[in-house]
Length: 544
Image (cartoon, rainbow, N blue to C red; front, side):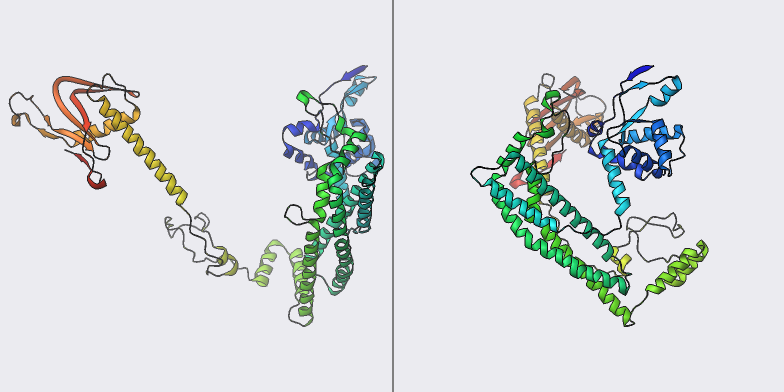
């Protein structure tokens, strides 16, 4: 039976839509518990170019290679392949299945191929596993070739007849391949050097070997780089004005993948990573390696600093070994013997050894007071009690003395200006509300007050009623209603210049309309008027 299977591949563009950080999930198989099986599977796919493999094909290759995944059954292998596809290392292939039976069709239906990201990660992983602990030699001879290539390129560009585009393309590619190899070897060597110099257990023979390495090899590298760097920087300065024209001629001669068709709305249908030396950014990186173009220092300056730090570390090891030879300190053998005791001891014995060797007894309580607002009873257990923050100086050096410079006083000027502005805005809003109340006095049922005006009216009304003088009916004159009576109930805000007077009138009703609703006052009449401002800037609020 023949059937064409069309399934949308899980390509790297889908990971791009989820963000560049999604690509980091492709490294997950290197730290998974079954990483040996995943490595064997990925090596099978990396051993072929542009080939899609089904489960039976992968099983056969795994059995031929041997290793951890040689005895994997088809169901387990299918699960591993599907997981690699979800991580982004593999993708499902579109193909035409040819099978003579349903069983063969089911086994061969799912085929997988390698993604670009998965191939790069596996290649880097194999390189790390094969030579992670080896010291890589620095290809210092490539630096002279880089200088020669740049000088020849600058000389040919300055000739009247110019330079052939194909010749220029070959020279540019050669220069950047040589420079990339040289820069990678420099980084690898100094990373290995830092790893070695961080050790403090070097014996005399190891120290002698590394001393010769530093004094001879590193010095030779530094001298060569210091000699070539100004010359290369001068050639790049000479070549820099002609660089845009050179890149334009190279693109016109060989566009490469930069002429890929566009997709929706003119966007590129695929992302293209140009060859080294075909973009302005590549040349800026080359120039920044030899000259300080951004104020952060060049790579040559960093190389000098790294060499100086390496020599300082070598000197520190030399001082340690001299003190050890004079009998002042020699604990290396003792510490190695103690480490062997720890390795062979049971957990209970290891605790006893630690107490005897380092004095690590049971917990001792320190007199660090808790926070002032936190009272801890004496019967509270140390296991469940709150944690007290111990200062760094007391925890690491056993000293309570303050170290370092005193911190500067905090500047609150911006907060003060903000609070002053907010106070001015609140005062302006209250003044506008007071003006609105004065204009609406006597016609509250016809005017519609704002929320601020209603709030100010309620504030004045509450003050007036709370401080009003009440008299019994027997104390009033003729014509006054029985019960309690209001007499001269008023309140005022001298700062706003507003005064509210409340009168009681039998049978009357005052309706105050506002955006928040209606306020009904039975047998009360309101009168809002202006009052005299405070004397000499004083603010007075009275209610009687």
